[in-house]
Length: 261
Length: 105
Image 1 (cartoon, rainbow over the protein chains, first blue to last red):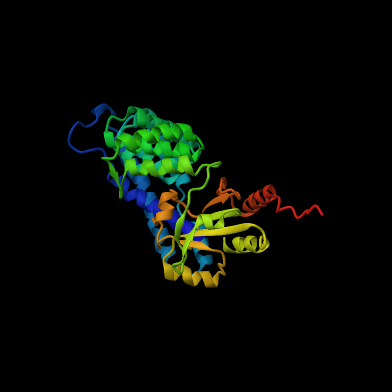
Image 2 (tube, rainbow over the protein chains, first blue to last red):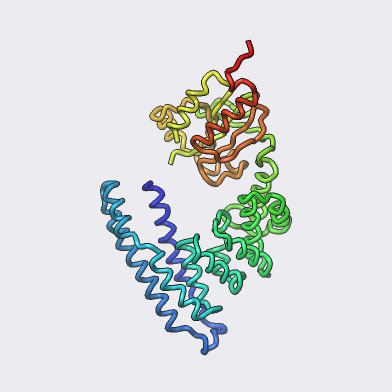
């Protein structure tokens, strides 16, 4: 249980500094003065700073705690809940639609709580007005392959359709393909991923190109779906003895990819 | 995890069944845990981290990931856990005719 908490906290803590970089670009065209939501921006900063401070205070106490019981108590009592901040933020977006402020509110809401009514609303608004936005492309799109929010697919499709930026379009298409694979829509997933494999060898993301990543997912769609014959596995046991899956032919097999963490 | 797997392996002793792991831990770590947790079933050691060759080829990004294969090697279930896993194994053994201990003599 503790690991789950820590992982979740890591995600929350990461989200805030990233967001700080997402302020509207300085220089270039600034939004027309009539819609400049400076009050709104201030409120946004104030509310999210409040959350960050509460999180910092919580983390400091959490690190000092020595027993699981103490930690659990802290989580129950002091871990700030995004649900109590998001309802204060959403009206800011609604009052200033189609501005960087609105985008920042939606991105914040989704990165702190990616499910439920509010997340759906945020996804929908991003799909309508920010499908090609750089911040959305970087911080939201790549996280959506396992999304449970019905509107996440709407955003992914909008990003694939509307993006003209090669890299952003490729990333969105890889994510949409993977999302569809995860939701048992293999045929459409294959079509999208084939296109990524053919056209995005030039875009690196991490160690691999988008094309390579698409090929990994395609291998799974084509060879590892229910009803397919499992591909051979060759490798070694812990003491270095050669081992292969076909050694166990004629038996029912549970294949368990596991790690002790 | 381990307790459930241990009991499944124990219950299926003598039946045409194998639990096979693909492990992503550093060697020393899993060697130690093997003894502590009584991991007696066979497993592939996949290079000591989560981007080992088998996990990469099988596009595994979350652990555990489970596949259940029938006696012909066909993938029949994915990511079944606990009782669901037991049921899947029993169903496939029955299909083979050896799960039901009803011998016709």
